[in-house]
Length: 293
Image (cartoon, rainbow, N blue to C red; front, side, top):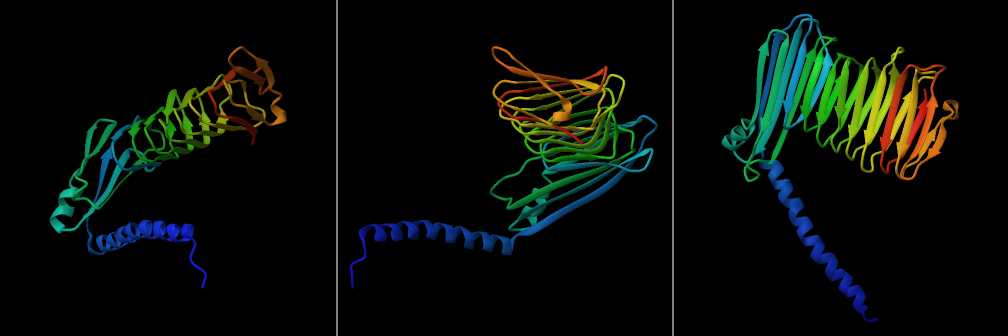
């Protein structure tokens, strides 16, 4: 029998050293999942509002869904869970997520906070679902994923780390959406006045339209963020795109022209004859896609 090469023995030893702790962690995870006790909280509260409702939210933990519901009421549905190795510890952990709601006339303010001890908490989740009248102004700060659908109004969103998604939304007034370091995704969204989209690291995707008559869309993508814009042809706007080190990929139907500056490259195009609106896109290193729907 030929002797086993030294490098083969060394490789086998290293694989064994790695496999032992991995197997140990897997066994430990299986044991914990088998003994974990979960506490669950579910509350639904309805608040009466008038013809000019406004929802304010400050959510420091968990995901948020905001969707169109019935007129003249805002419904807050709060669900959160926590798991630990004893019933008392699970109950204590689930109580660390607090949802406080204040209501005055047409305004509802929802604040969610959460703190926990990593020694006692094995699993944890939080989910807020809020139904609002179809025409509602929103002022939202969220750390987790945020999804908004079917709403029309002035929308101000400050995201932090996760995805901010708007679908079937009409943005009125001076709306601002900042995704933080997360992605910003707008689908079937109409800009009726002035809207600003910002991301520090995540990508920005806009698929929608600008209302004719002078609406404006401003997109600021710093860092390595990529931008994708899809609009119907024609669109009542003039587009100006500028980037330091990125590139513009555009459908030929838009007829962009290029100007090279000392630091930035700029492209511009009239998206319809005699446009009154404006689209401004500024990026650093990311690429910009400009498509026709």
